[in-house]
Amino acid sequence: MAIVGLGGAVATTAIAGIEMIKAGSNSLGGLPLADRDDAGMVAYRDLCFGGWDLTEDTLDVCALRHGVIGHAELSDGASSLSGMRAWPAVGSTDFCANIDGGNKVVATGHRQAVELIRADMDRFRVEQGLERLVMINLASTERLPDPQAESLSSIAAFERGLDGNDPAISPAMLYAYAAIGADTPYANFTPSVAADVAPLAELAHQRHVPIGGKDGKTGQTMMKTVIAPALRQRSLHVDGWFSTNILGNSDGRALDDPRSLQAKLDTKKSVLNQILGYPVEDHIVMIHYYRPRGDDKEAWDNIDITGFLGQKMQLKLNFLCKDSVLAAPLVIEIARILDLARQRGQGGVQEQLGVFFKAPQTTDGREPRHGFNDQQLVLEEWLDRG
Image 1: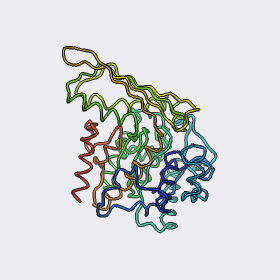
Image 2: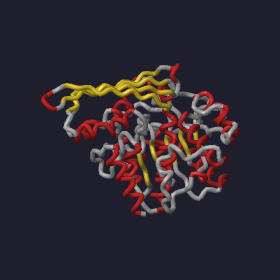
Image 3: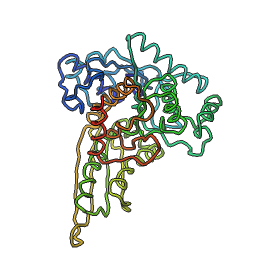
Image 4: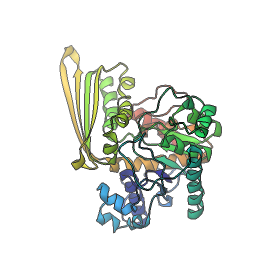
């Protein structure tokens, strides 16, 4: 698995968890597909990791800084993180203002950056003796690109934009383009615009490369997609839904930039109207960077509802969670499903991945279904088809 953002909290948590499984010091608890034995799906023990990041630190140092993985885990099966470093990454403070580092690719332009990304992928395959490779984007959230940019209108325009180093083309798009052009399955676990932009989605369709995204559905939004269908089925009208979050990890630091924050808010707010069948006029979502909290995210929801006889009621939810502990297992399963899709000869957007994302891609650009149970059934039916 080639990860963009290898030194981040989600990536180091995923790697540590798998390494501890290999060492026999971690169970399969928390992995959504651990109880399935689908033919062709790669075993957890057979996963290996590499990738790109702007940090120059070894992954054990990164993990300790994030505060999810501690010395106990590093000495109990996850010690291999101490010998792992990320490859130099493509970065842009224009697209991600609050995230930078010294481990940055030196490239003359977009084309050379793509060539360097692909060279890393090829080297990783050879060094690890890999039969297959999947790329997952776990990097920090980028600001939204200019929707009117000519480069984002078609494959031909995107190719011209690469040649001309168009500033509308982001690092996330370069990684997605590098993967798709190398026939490597790709998923975007971030809110950044990547393989969902029109030319890259079309390129994946043409090359028959499995893709999926975007923005991992882990905590607060997962709960929305569980609770909202139940409210609809009981005819409890949602008058308003107020959501707020505090977190202090690198994701929170990236979202402290208003431009990156908007990309995140757009995906978090996308689920309710489709599930309920009507617009929730007072649907408010807020995210606050609060450094002392680290990876221990806290989310509050207040839901105002109207029931029988017009009676007003409220539902309040307080979710305290380790963000990366929720996210890492999903990343692992997404990679395994993408790889299985490739083995089954299925390319383009993989709609069965929708249960893992806040803003799932669809094959024809239609509005995705967001209800958790509906999405879970789609995944299970796809797995059962073999």
